[in-house]
Image (cartoon, rainbow, N blue to C red; front, side, top):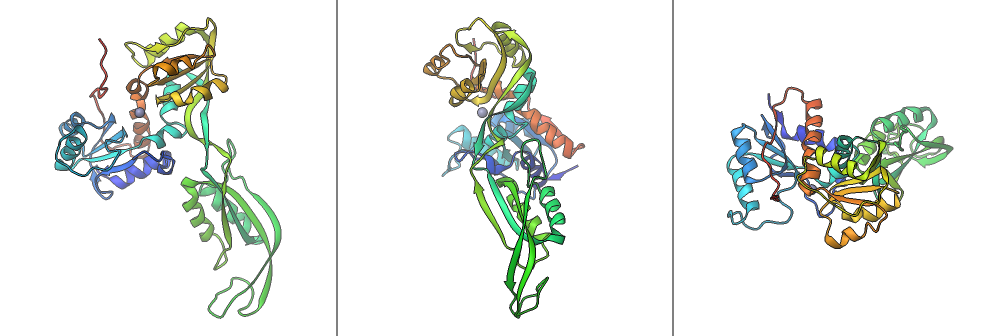
Length: 366
Ligand SMILES: [Zn+2]
């Protein structure tokens, strides 16, 4: 069974829309054509030469990685470093490379949620919700058509606020217009002023779904030229952001919690700040390099903040207010493959999916 690369990408990006990636990031298709038929995909945290060799051995012509192998512009492909060698090998063997990075970090069910589930956290939510992802769509429509429009907008993904969907606000007014001779007016006559009782329908919509919602609005609006506006909304969006905060079902002492981390993430070692001698229950975490969220974790009242790549001086920022634990970058994100696996298995149950058995962690412990 083969599937078009485009359809695999669509499945992943429905879950983790690419518009959410950080500006420095390079998520998306790195090598390959969207119309390529894919007969097998290999899931990995990092795409390296060894992973390309594994894909060849396992008869996969797509590698889906969390970390993009290419971050900045390449001017030559001569194999002088591991990035160029990996790409050359992929190109020579017609193996597509796709990455889903910071957009997968930022969605519900993404990298940090995978960590939280494995630790056993409940009541999880995004630690630092972002703003800049929301818009308000406003349109004006004859009353008789308004219900159908509201339904179509909701079906396209507009009007989601927290645990509520189909949210909208409507108010009554009058629309006035005059159609010229070329027009085909739904109501009123060509060349004459017309006044129509209209509803003003307002809905919230995120950037990822804006295109689809506008298309749904146009398809379900009876007017030839629907009047509409899109306004950026500055509110935080609880569905998108970095890190997770949640609770342990039962409070634990600090060392037992750290031991749980060692077990869940199969750690040889972990770094942590002085224990505070109390039970911990509220846990914040962020997969990968998350020291930029130490202050956010503190102000959210976390007892522990679990992340990776904490620098020496940043450990001092724990400041006896919380326990900081650095479990390693690879270790924190090693289960990311399981997110890709769930998305793809749900959509394409019979597709040949393989999980890389190569440990790509460049860091060793003695
Ligand atoms: Zn990472």
